[in-house]
Length: 146
Image (cartoon, rainbow, N blue to C red):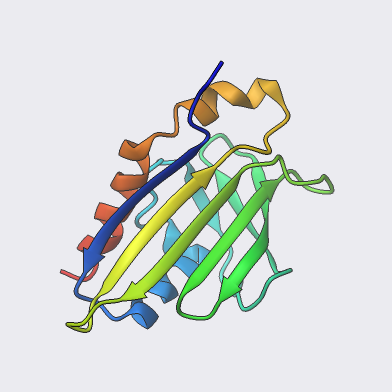
């Protein structure tokens, strides 16, 4: 079956890239704008600083997700792969790229990539993560900045 396993959405916000990045790089702040309505909790003090960092979030289903940071450039890019405790990442990747605009704002691109997802029991949820979900996160994130 041919299907899209990389979903992307973008928006522009008047906030500077550094301000937007703080919302994304701090898991506690993610709770306020998660468009998948999948995050229930995250302990403070887990702000991401580098590839190799791992931050833990608890889903609305009560599962802890150990998010392994696989791409990072301060103020510009961040991506992670979720896993269960003590296990390898599931194979999907959540990513964000921030590009400064000429007027001091930020173009924000959000990507969900499940090309490496091997657990077929997770395929249905992956298929249901669409541009609409990503756009919901982007809209909520942009709303924080007016």
